[in-house]
Length: 91
Image 1 (cartoon, rainbow, N blue to C red):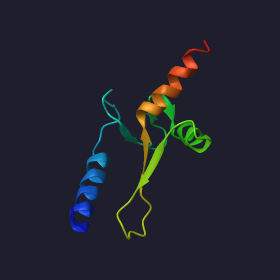
Image 2 (cartoon, rainbow, N blue to C red):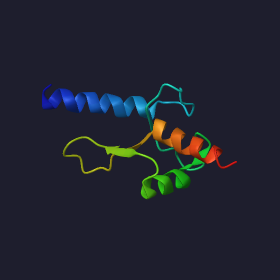
Image 3 (tube, rainbow, N blue to C red):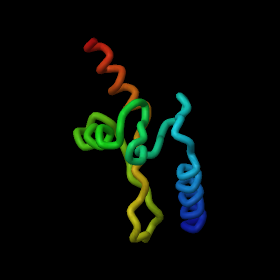
């Protein structure tokens, strides 16, 4: 895959994520961090960032090569759901 093809594929991925609804399929592996006031799997943006910072949930930042603009932060949903399930054992 050439550099141009990679950039195009990444641009298409980011665009499709921008058009994504707030509901997430159980088969989805990655999702954007929700906007302010929105939730992902019942957790607000700040809670998700705390989980990412603590290492409890996996995430990745993607951006176009050479771009000066910050990228998109994606959350690994299986790791987020695993963390939520581990909390349910405490109840």
